[in-house]
Image (cartoon, rainbow, N blue to C red; front, side, top):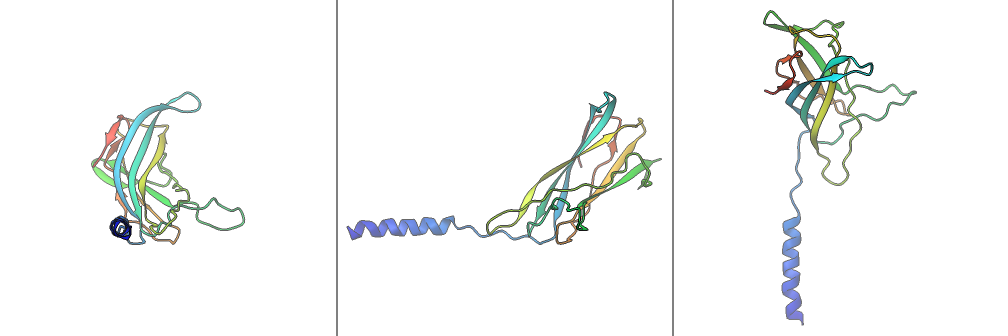
Length: 173
């Protein structure tokens, strides 16, 4: 009887050790990578034809503290953790757009995320939607963007490809 139990215990021990993987580690600063920007035709709430844009990017956060809590009215807390800067193309030159540019975004809020367990690393894809009410065939833009985690660590900066807002399509690097 003991002879049959020993091989089973040895086999179980080997399987248990093999299933324990090494915990992946990444730096605490978030990392982002631009994936694509899609321009599409859509309709606003009043039934007007407008253009929409969808920015997609990949992120990693080594300490898993990405996203902000729901704002508390009594506390002074950050309300933006995705920062987007608009660049305009004029006569072939790329330059920052003025603050009053109708395409200028105000920033975005990534919701609170947290993983349980030993591995706190967060990885995934984020999509952000933009709406363009006024546009012409000459409107070509580009966005630079970065994120911040709850500890205040900023990610690298990423940039979209050039985006001709008038023409629907997918724009990738």
